[in-house]
Length: 154
Image (cartoon, rainbow, N blue to C red; front, top):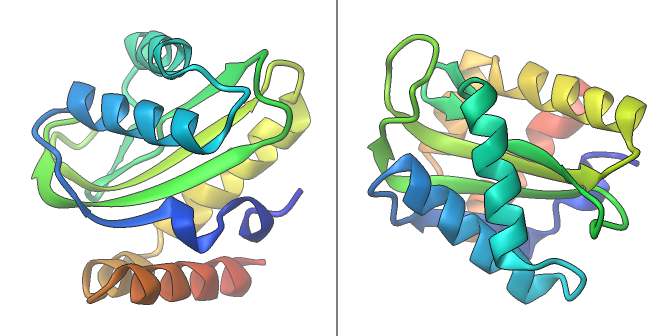
């Protein structure tokens, strides 16, 4: 399963209100449950928070990759949020986060989960990609720039 295939334009969100790490994760959980009938927002939120308790998914340079497994997730689901204002995400470099790439995978998707996480990390570790994503002017522009970065990485 490719990253491009699981990140449709409607799950690339532009200027999402932040506030806090918890609010960002709540926003995503509600959003994804509205768009994926098999998922429950409270369950998704609980799993993302449980993962954050193991250690922040803030990887530095203003990027976070919250991720979780769910028994109700039939196939990997991705979403990308560019926040209107950076939020404290307890990132490893202490910097606030404004680029959030969220992954949900089926409970048993070990190899696929790790491969998708590695792909996302590789894309988001590129300074030029981060700069282009931050410089986008619309949801469509943001999605196009993200897909370009995915294709370059692949």
